[in-house]
Amino acid sequence: MSYPNTMGGAEIPMWIDEKIIHLGAEATVTSGSWLGKSAILKMRHPRGYRSPKLDRKLTRQRLSVEARVLGKLQLNDFSSPVLFDLDLENGWILMSRFEGITLYESLNQAIEPLEKIRSFGGLIRKLHEIGFSHGDLTTHNVLIDENNNLHLIDFGLSRILPELEHLGLDLQVLHECLTASHSEYENAVDELIYGYLNADSGLLGSISSKDVIFRFNEIRGRVRYHA
Image (cartoon, rainbow, N blue to C red; front, side, top):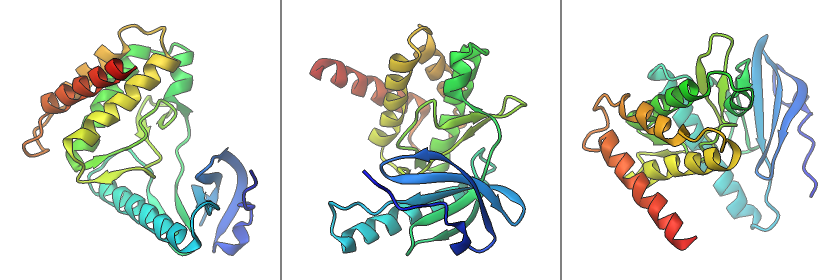
């Protein structure tokens, strides 16, 4: 499958390309700089199997949601990229870049693994309390900087004001990731739940962290049953 060349940053004012860091089915992610700041450019690909009109509509919707999520996260001092610019018509979003390694890499290097997973659980609870689900919680979508701070990235599948089911699904996706990619850590899911429960500040209205964990366990049970 071929994708449009996203290394044409001259079309985006003040953007300077460096290198492509991810080439996926939905988008190409390129590192570079914007107004002298380290930045990331995510360019969504047209999907050939959709009608052009529907494809443009979906692209605008997803970018619009991602931009709204990033904006509100910054207002709540959440560890996530800062939105710099976006173009809904041409399908790109520009945001700040974090330096560091992914949680996936950190766990493979066995660098304080269970403590990192516990902290990740707390970060997820904070995201949920602000009023968002992530939609793609894996250890590839968390960056760890030199001070061991965790930063959540890639909000392209996020939901605003999610239902309890979506919050439980966030944990289920991460549970599947931990089981498949980091099976050497037998207590990983327990640490995740511990971090999530202990970060509950009661800011999510009637949905407590215990409600989310209960729904997560229901989803986990359904998955086991159907497997």
